[in-house]
Image (cartoon, rainbow, N blue to C red; front, side, top):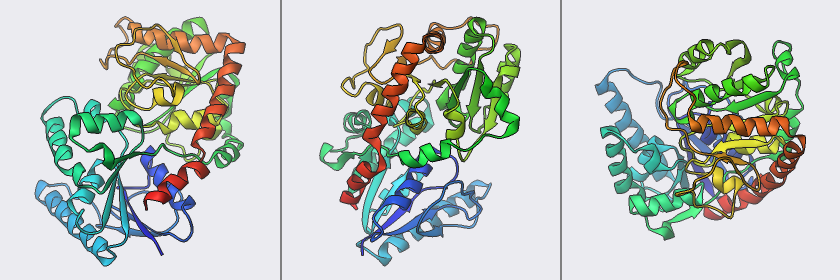
Length: 395
């Protein structure tokens, strides 16, 4: 019997965590699945199949304790891998990836890279340290799974990884399951929101997602469509800042922070537009899941993923000058500059383009129907029954 160890920090909120959940549930039943996680107090938000192994009891605050925990995790993973040298260990996200490559001599190691690393780590000493570490360790993996062609190119160009060691496997989606979950009724306290045109976004409230740009763009949408609402699903460190920004812009009553939702689909399917303002991605699950719900999508043209999903024959987004780029399967807008503007700062050109894109969909029913149909057509390419075979071929 083949055996796979999925190595990820937690099974709580996040796209990589959802991917591990889907893989554990859908891989061939003849493959034994083990999920390696960090502290036993870790919250589990996603269903899974297989044995769960915690590498340590909990996290520690002081530096010495943290170093001991890191060393302990490396030793524990190495022991687990040595118990069955024929097993494949697939790690997700950077910290598990580093431990997996450090123990690469013990069994077969596959690293899943889910972000455009040179864009993510582009500033400061910590980024330089990460880049040096990745450049040294990632080539030691037996195989690297990149979730987009752009990530593959980034690893080759900037991290000295041999192209033969990289395989692109896109994220996969249980389309039937998503559509069944989307039928669930929403809570009474939220139902009134969706009696109005709703723009929705899903993702951690952190710097990467750039939610403040979307909130500022929404303030311009409100000027044209006063009853519009913005719904934000997710949790994170920037929630208080985002709340204050919405308040200062006098739109707090129309910006709804609903936190993390185990079933985001019931909210997405009742929305008119999905919008994403990220600075970098890998292969954005939230964008694809909105398409599965038949909702037209708008995304920043960030590296990587959005362009490959919405314009699959046009991977290169270098030196593109456009206003609003209506592609085959959705709308791409320029990436915002990342500055944390306050309510008194003028709306940037990039934010205006987000607002104009939203308004074009809300005001043009024919265009809305076109992109709704295109969303549902494109997402078929990522149906889990197709993608799971690619994973099974590398285990």
